[in-house]
Length: 329
Ligand code: NDP
Ligand code: GDR
Image 1 (cartoon, rainbow, N blue to C red):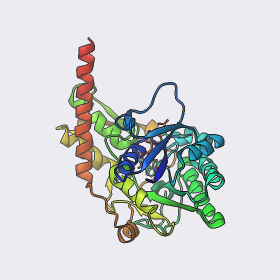
Image 2 (spheres, protein in one colour):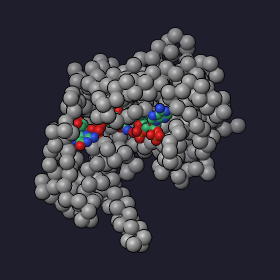
Image 3 (spheres, rainbow, N blue to C red):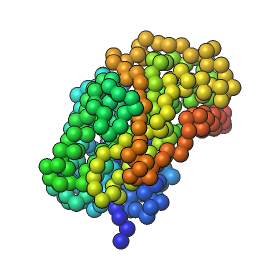
Image 4 (tube, rainbow, N blue to C red):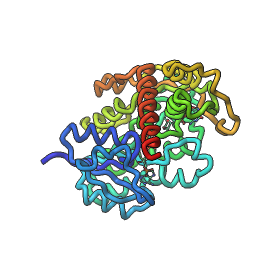
């Protein structure tokens, strides 16, 4: 009988790529979806006849128990979170409840339903925050700089604590930023590539951004989900960093995207004080040596290729929306 996997956050960017990857590996795939007033399955529409959706929420213990029972999961990938850093200052308590305490709820449910379940927790490079050393690896201390990162640090330690307390196979992958054409529109990469496409096609002229100096280690989401899966195939549960080891500033990202669209970014980008964060993370670069050596994991998509792919996808999407709008009259 094939293995069964439950993905929380299946409607998100990573959830959609992970579902594709697990289906390719022969898994029965279940996805936890929270109730919304209208369906929110754009990223997994092409998979709906291949995966089973189970209603539930990280805020609701009982729904997690039921989802584990219904899926008879061998592996659980906890990708669900309030994942937008900027929002976490406006909604710190909600972010702590979902992104932090939600993980304790899931671990408790696993303990109750089947302690043999293997669990992946999506930790974040944001936990390093004002990092003391560069590049960051599994040994680098955390110094979180946002309510989101503080919640993720709690989630990280509670996962390790349940492993040490109860012998669960539960482990954290510490991923640096990873992007794709399926990235949410509010994150800086997609905000930029989508705006470049709209400006190119004459739908807007200006793009407002915050901190252009911030530096990140950006990779392709499709590469990172392979690492998540590999972690749960190991003989022992332990933490791994996933990163490209290359970093670029937001300004370089804008320049790369706009140039690919045939635009001069300086004519369109304005900086806006309201988009600056109360405490930003200025510089992150990851060291994925352990993942390379133990898991054989390597990111396969260089920065420029990633940005070009996102701009091309946005040009295609915006053109299609314009055509559909014209056809509707
Ligand atoms: P997204 O924001 O695209 O997806 C988040 C998912 O979580 C969505 O499916 C969302 O559902 C779901 N969700 C939110 N709240 C709840 C809740 N209360 N109960 C159940 N589901 C909920 O994130 P990504 O795919 O980019 O990231 C996946 C995970 O990895 C997140 O935990 C993120 O914090 C973490 N991470 C991401 C990195 C990145 O660069 N992408 C890097 C490091 C860590 P809905 O569609 O209904 O909103
Ligand atoms: P991040 O991603 O906070 O690293 O979290 P985001 O793309 O939001 O910001 C990256 C950097 O860009 C700067 N920036 C802007 N950001 C946004 N969103 N919008 C802007 O207009 C803008 N202008 C400048 C930010 O200040 C920041 O320095 C992402 C999320 O996926 C988290 O869930 C994940 O844990 C981390 O990556 C790793």
